[in-house]
Length: 431
Image (cartoon, rainbow, N blue to C red; front, side, top):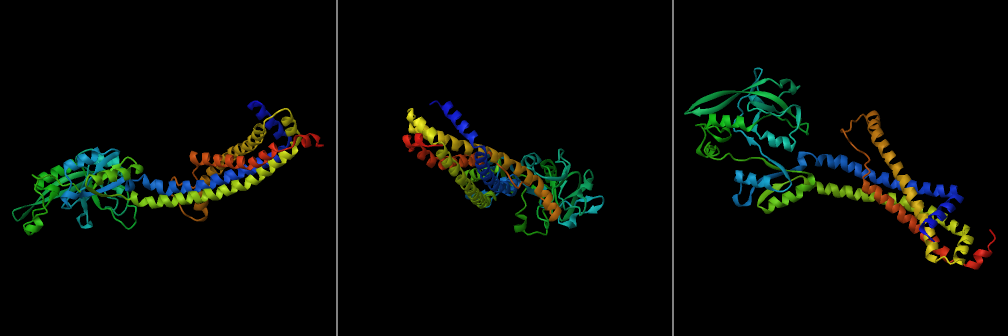
């Protein structure tokens, strides 16, 4: 019996009991849809809660504190070159904290009493690392700066385009010498994620830092205050010495690369830390959650298998005479078994396809409706792009596999029973 004939036989018999077949397919589809929708909640919440954080610099950054063989000594140019050469490193950033505030003024407002911190960065590398702005743009010229969000109490974007007056302090003997500088504000850094934090920094490029260091004659604008002790002056680095690197961060191409990069540079002797290591426990929690939801959904498919078993058992009973005729003309038992397994498998596949389509529809509806419901009745605003339900292709494939496997197992018993039907009794049966 050809495979095409077997399929034709299955279709022909399926038409005889459309109502029962459709109800069985519907039950299978409902179980499959329930499995997909339940598990999709785990995938959706993981994407919204973890993946959005993972894509942030907070997680892709690896803080490098120094090398084992040099203790607390700052990193050098050679160290920076090595870190940039590590595979899958997007960029390497650093921050030079100036040792004086530069007494900034904007529109006559003295900001030096606000605890201002002047910081020099490489804006080209910061741009690659995802330096976030509240408004404006990153500096492109030497005399352009970005201010912290909290430097102006309200509407800091109003200062974009305005001139900031700076003063570089150094001592000539015991007398203070102030050198005026000007810079244009072109951007405002994004607000801190923690409401109680205040960002009162001034971010400048390396060209402006070079100019300030030439004025002060020291690295990072260190002040040679004659009132300081020799020990305190020991922290001031002469301009003839290399500039120390501070707050070095290695930025990975993606969160998945963080662990490998961290292990590589740790083996090279660099102390480092990344918050991505701590998120592993969160991912494990979501994995357990998805497994649990998938298990509950699988139970629904198993319940649907009762209907498949019942349908196939009745099909064997009703087609006993047909089976007897096939055996009488020489049909092999494996062929008869295959006919019923094909039918049960067809029910499982059809139910899985319908269930998957329904699940995708439910997922789209939930993602569209839940934010509205929460904002309307709970007066809460969800983060942009928050996803409640996400159905990856792997989840659909898994659900289809489970549905097919359960259907085949449900039809295996009736199929074996069909092969054991006595030919003479089947042919004598009065249907």
